[in-house]
Length: 163
Image (cartoon, rainbow, N blue to C red; front, side, top):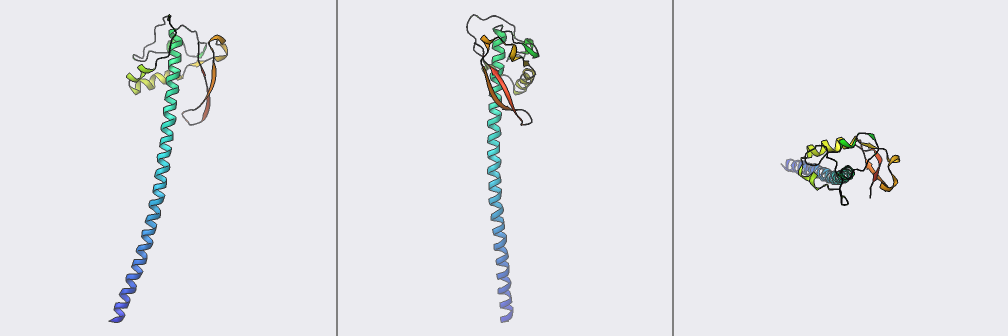
């Protein structure tokens, strides 16, 4: 009987040690999972930041193109025409009208259109390629901006600001 009790104690001790090992493995896996979750959340935050920055640049470009069209600034285009620049709200080409006051790009009205329409507008305007070499220097203030294309490759974007 004492042997059976001793055997049961040994068996219980063996099971406890196995249980402790499994608990340690589970805790290690939980730590690894927490690290991966943190890395995933950090990556999501970086992606959101990049997407926000990209949207800001698209809005800025749209505002500049729209202001140039309204102010009758002739932009030399390699691809596209001034007619490809559309109104924010209606997605219809802007009627060119000379403005008497200094124009400030207005991108607020883009907030009122759906994200699908916004995406279509940005895709259409992204096809516009401007020949910056032919822009009159009085309208040109060039700055280089780093950006990522749809395949996450670094590219340079030359933004211009006209006076």
